Image (cartoon, rainbow, N blue to C red; front, top):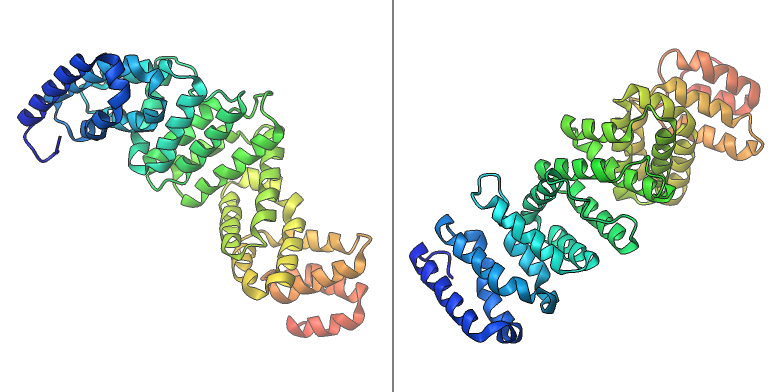
Length: 371
């Protein structure tokens, strides 16, 4: 079954497979299946159109009836068949029908686990897997993943993560489309934790700066619904908690924030309520990890509306733990790029002069203000 050999040799070899499998019967096939599948399964991807009919016939007539006894080979069988699902292929319907027959031979959990394994572990197969899911939807079939079953829900998250992080835009778009159709934020059967986790996973696509991905994400999120905005806010805060104490990831988090600024309506709903938490987290990260946090943080503060920032800083002085808050305020003034003409006279000078006159002299010199 060497792909370098002529298709005529492949045709004769498949005829030999047909004869041998017909002689040994189902019992012999189950006993020695691995010997035959080792050479047969990888061949389909490279086979010519003229021999694919014979190949599909062998799988359908000999291996399909024995599927229940060959659970271990299911991932390999899916990986072998899935390349036949290409838009230019002449055997799309035959391959799809055969894969659905194979699916029906196994329990839902077994098939979903095997499919997800192929999708996650074999990136070259992902575009074919996405097309397979799209074809199932065209036939009005139910979602492959039963989200009410814990094991299949976990597999759905593994599938989503691999697809969303794939460098192939076709795979990422297809994954987004599949999530948008089957993982609805309006679904009352899905917990808040699951919804927040899915949004957090999908935030990554915003940083790719692709309009088709961004449009799909916001269409699924639907920021016009307040409940969805609350879920989005919770996912941002969770992402912030996980990333700001991990310097390699904190830059990615601030890129996400910068991308959200491109959506004016959503950022206006989100940022005023979380900017104080962002400042506090940057301060805490600075205390633990040092100045490395300042570069990605300042890349964000350079483009955010500073009136939102200063409103949050002033709110710090109105809270009970004033001493610690003043430390955060001083840190922000000295280290964050939150100064521009007009800001000092509007916020900084009156605030410092009123709250702590001694510190006001020092900080005024930093910003070239007359005390």
